[in-house]
View (cartoon, rainbow, N blue to C red):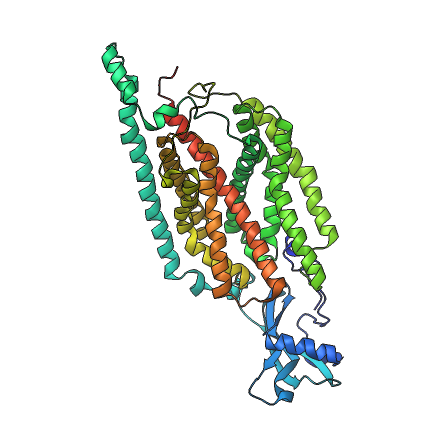
Length: 521
């Protein structure tokens, strides 16, 4: 069984394959034949016993088709000498159609006790069987239809869809009813001084901060970078999901990760364009600093987490460690494709869409922000803003986590596309409502609040991952804990930046819309 080198995504996913030392020829049956002779020493016995007790299993690939087997059997009710048994023979059944391999299966037998000094003859056999299953449908056996197409999956979509209807109706009510009366008052041409003075004295809420609402936010460089990166990630997720739907990427090992890396590099123009335009519109001068931060922020955060996990994998001697050459390849892709495209996008963005066009003029002296009740503070608005978006993707997160950590093949990317669209709509609507409440509280620091209000969705996803780890997985030990929470942190950082950018861009359009018809000095 000769195994070839994997693609970029396969290596990054910790699935670098090694030769299984099992010689298999096409359509050639093999009676019981020796793989190797294994002489057990004390260290080997201890290692095998630990593997058997913890139900360790291995994975083979034959013509890109996986097959699995346990290391051995554990019987705690037997005597000490027969508690740990190691499988010594592997029976491999391969089904074929013409010159194509269609299905592979593995059964094991001949369990032998693990005893120091014992010589074990590790053997295998191969049997070829013809089948009429077509090559195009050979992967269907790995797809768990009852699990992914359960009724609760459809119910979650319906529940999220109803949430979208409710939130869009709420936002429409704010825009069409609450603001319409204010617009009518501001649009009046009335020479009556008494009426004008009465109208001015009755002003309250969001209308009072029109001279400060377009004031540049603090840490403009960082906000521009995360908004640009989030816009890129939103487009990236959409492209990868569409490729997965039409290209069945789940069939190839590491194909999803490879597609993600390539699409990320090619969509870097979007992050530069959005970030450069936003930075220039808000009066930013050091656009080179903004461009460098935009191009490197998310990749270097992922690199930092990956470096720590890779160091742990090397320390434990795991195949999950990423080779140095692969890291060089990823860096070259970033340096020669992603970075130049981000630079080009920044230049075009700041020149084409970077001119200030605020509906209201910013006053010289900032308006003092009055104290409000605790639930109208930016921190509370930000923390509560992520609850509904998380609720819209809660069920799908269970399927995604189960697919990734319990090694099920995730193939229902149509569901994921629908959930992603729902997430975007819910995030925009919730953030707009939160921004409106904040402005009515006469707090004009809406930019970062709108970002964190949407980004807090990732915080709840991470809390859910802690619950999932303790309830749904059987992981233990520092190595597994670090990889689980490290990769989950990487996922949540990307999700937070994506949702935050979507929330900010939606709130930005809302704020510009409601202040557009106000007559400002």
